[in-house]
Length: 157
Length: 269
Image (tube, rainbow over all chains, first blue to last red; front, side, top):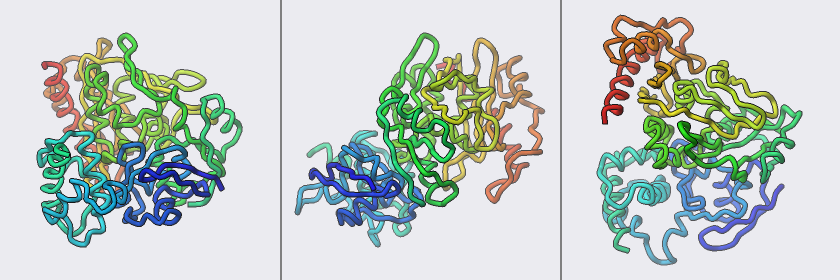
């Protein structure tokens, strides 16, 4: 067992983990932050996407022990308590979900996309850059619209 | 995934001593291939040595007519690097087609080539550009580095520190991605240099290989038409549920033509 200390959603936390403990297990099972989902557990679906030191990663394929000293943001920490982040608001506004299972990962991935590609995103860019996130309900149409709108809204805030 | 002891050394020497003389210890780079393999219990190790804290292994720099990329540089940094875009835009484009953006934030050049997945993209650029793989012990020419299926010239205890890419006159990479995984069903990297033309093929065989007939034809005339009548024999190529060996053989020639066309357009800019 190793003790790992990191900052999650602005709070200093620490936990005893095994070498094999995944970041997503640390978040969900140790810290009870269950907004981050496990879909495929094979780094394909993107449901477990969080920001690690500011960059989008699939937390099912990151070792918790490797996050010593790191800063992690999950869907719970994206906006202050009781408020929605502009990207969350855009997903609500454009009805960019059906069952909602993939939504936390979609939103964390969308915010990372804005970091990499800026606030003006054309449809092609969004679809291409969303390659790492799978939704089995919506057909992506409203997700793409929401990300474009959310990206613009993030510029205003 | 079976449990293991986790180590995160701060220096290359410390990493080297942790793996020295032990075959049940594995180096961890970005983990994008290793962690899934551990989960599937395709591999199991007593210890993992994470190279993520060794700053000397990171970064991109130009040294004269060579682009040097640190082994622990993530794909996303190669994609976004102005230095790479100026020197070898084909390499940035190739990196931008690996996996997906979230994978590219973690996966590294050193991890990719040490793993030597037969369908990985980076090996095509390393072999196509006649790059040099630099380790903590020596320098290995690309032609001597990739030996077979998941097999490289790396010796036990050896750690890749960087890859040195000579800057070509023109280069391009074309791949036919498997639609779900984005791994190359076949991918062809073409490079035109003062010393000649090199054509490297990934995804089609058990390991990346040079398409020498195409190289000879393109050395005479760097034009897609130079490949007219040239074929790849399917013997020994990969055949699986995604594509037969014959299909891959056909893809290689088509992709080689497209890569030449793309390299010519890029060169004419």
